[in-house]
Image (cartoon, rainbow, N blue to C red):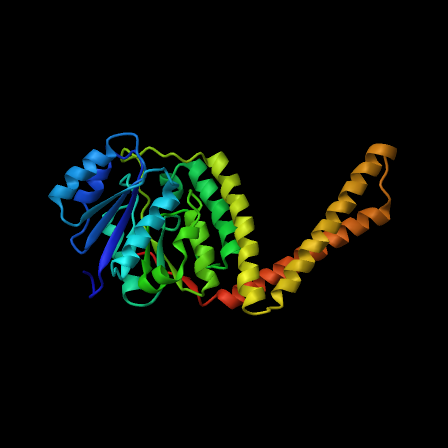
Amino acid sequence: MYKDKKISVVVPAYNEETQIEKVVLTMPDLVDKIIIINDCSTDSTKTVVEELVGRDPRVVLINHEVNQGVGGAIATGYIWSRDNDIEISVVMAGDAQMDPRDLISIVDPVAEGIADYSKANRLITGDAYNQIPKIRFFGNSVLSLMTKVASGYWNVSDSQTGYTAINRKALETIEWSKMYKRYGQPNDLLVKLNIHDFKVVDVPTEPVYHVGEKSGIKIHKVIFTIGSLLVRLFFLRMFEKYYKRDFHPLIFFYGFGLAMLFVSALFFIRMFFLWWQVGDVPEITMIAWIFTLSISFNSMFFAMWFDYETNKNLSFRLEAD
């Protein structure tokens, strides 16, 4: 236990036979349960974990008969934690990329009641730009910006981190059976936490790479897959939070901005068609395109400001040491 709170660590594991033992052996003593979700691994992950169960009574092995993805594995661990009176549930990867020395820093804000959900931020400490592979740093930065807009948590970044802690209230509130099951799970969860007005905190941590991990993430695919997910989640949050629960004026600004963006696209198509057909574009068409485009962006930026003001007390960032 830690600060009179029962702690579990959920470890999604898919083909982690070489790394999973290190994760368990380095787990701090304050952890009460280590919930390892074997997500239908094709290597000897299951055998390795079964051996660890006999050595450490804290280890609980749950086997998926069908691969559900990292999000599905985390949801399984959260459901187990919720149903077994766990007060704080932490997520750590099965590839040993999450430093156990950071666990207390991740848990503290939740244990002290400062936040309902805390997450690591690898982008704001030390020399993160040089430590993280450039393509992953770029992809993470793009997705973090998109996640700010989609989730309403404007003061947090490093949206793709999986090193997190969540309290019992949130465990009981979120419908885990509807959680996104692939690599977009952290983004999906942030949006759903915001819908319920849970407080989120960013905790500075050092990035950990080159410890023998094998990443299954294809950045060029993930950006588009998670990007399309974030668009859907954005509209879900607008509907659930600002239409169903509170008919907030920002929906008019977003709606008008998107409508003007559509009209602007029509003017742009008309300009291109005229240029292609007659080699000339009327000034009035050009002016109309610029006007509708500028009105669209002004309206949407104003909606973002409204959203920021509404949610600014729901997220914050701890200072790096």
